[in-house]
Amino acid sequence: MKTRNLMELIPLFNTQKEHMYNNNDSRRQFLKDTALVTAAATLPSLASFARSNRKAGDKVKLACIGIGNQGASDLMQFHKSGLAEFVAFCDVDMGAPQTQAVLKQFPNVPRFQDFRKMFDQMGSQIEAVSIGTPDHSHFAITMLALSLGKHVYVEKPMARTFNEVELMMKAAAKRPNVVTQMGNQGHSEANYFQFKAWTEAGIIKDVTAITAHMNSARRWHAFDPKITSLPGKEAIPATLDWDTWHTVVKEHDYNHDYHNGQWRCWYDFGMGALGDWGAHLIDTAHQFLDLGLPTEIGMLRADEHNPFFYPYSSTILFKFPARKGMPACDITWYDGTNNLPPLPEGYGSSSKLDPNIPAPSNGAIQSQRLNPGKIIYSKELTFKGGSHGSTLSIIPEEKAKEMAGKLPEVPVSPSNHYANFLKACMGQEKTRSPFEIAGPLSQVFCLGVLAQMLNTTLKFDRKSKKITNNKLANQLLVGAPPRKGWEQYYKI
Image 1 (tube, one colour):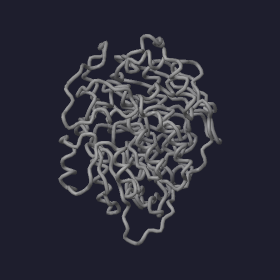
Image 2 (cartoon, helix red, strand yellow; image 1 turned 90 degrees about the vertical axis):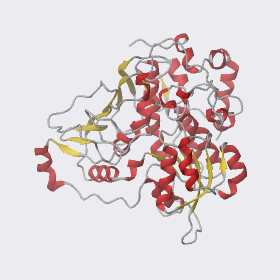
Image 3 (spheres, rainbow, N blue to C red; image 1 turned 180 degrees about the vertical axis):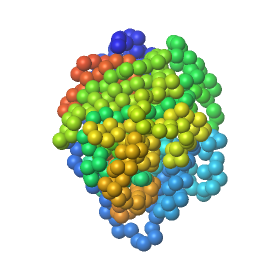
Image 4 (cartoon, rainbow, N blue to C red; image 1 turned 45 degrees about the vertical axis):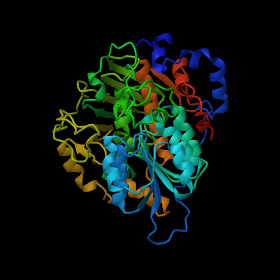
């Protein structure tokens, strides 16, 4: 496929031609001042146990940043665990409808619109934070929290650029007593424990190919792919701190199609369907098959490709090399309502709604021709799986019956993802999706997004962490310099 040239892609980077590419001094200084991905670092194992002299019955003093939509869902799950004491709420729009249920239920918790002011005023009372904000804002909030020694639960994906994820991993590794967890909730449910047990027992072995698919309608499927500029300026809601909403990203004129979940579809802010669902679909395979980072990322399909928002449908091929006695493995990602993957013989029913898959923030999963899920092909067996906590089954059914007596017992999860994080903050458990595990997974998504953005095949050197066949894509591992006043978050 043809790679778009630099001038064609200028609108994609917030119309920052003069900022990112013509202002070479600015970019050169940014690269010099930050810990970049151009030099690979070996990250030590992160000890996620917190050292604490807690008393029996003490709860984790938790500040919640982002209290609407997914942030509200996270907040309520922390509340249901019985292990959290809310000490601060922060949201750039405290007057928004999606925040009101939380504020009504917890009226006495101090409220802030700017996370920096929250830490300034409440830092001594905060042990941990949950971050349920748009993808582009995860980075700065996380880096400030880590610098202050706060435990961090951040929604998936960890960040929007490869380098931001790299810096988050390094910042966490420098602070081994700080607990981290990425919010791919199924990573503490039956799917996690089954995949681990089946891998250790040799049931899942010699995997050569994985299909992952998410074919529900996305917000951007109604947008015009022939647009020539970003959405027009609208009046900023009176209750919204639009400046803080941007964090490190260059400021955009307000438009409702950037806010309240719509941010996910724009390259400037979100990570598309891959960043949204990939962490729920390939997380266990990525961890327990030790996939790491790919050597090649290829675009096989990109319907209605444009420089502003994600394609209507994408097929992305990730190639992972042989490692530790395991064969090379390909992951093929399918998204889009008209982009269903090929199904193996004996796959069975695919349309009944999977009860393990939670509804997205913009409504219920629609009636499906195919539930979000995965198909794992090994040299001897084929596995069918869903999303989040859904377990695998062996297909076809005849083979499953043959294998039934050989399957190991799968332990029951001792804690869901939220309790796991809080218990880790207390020194009682180890988090299951700490940055050392979630970081490389998030970087896989960052590389996939670059292939989508440029609609081309990228070659990646796992050792140097560089893209070797596309200068522009290699620059985009770092991306544009942050807007003025936000540079400090890129220093560990």
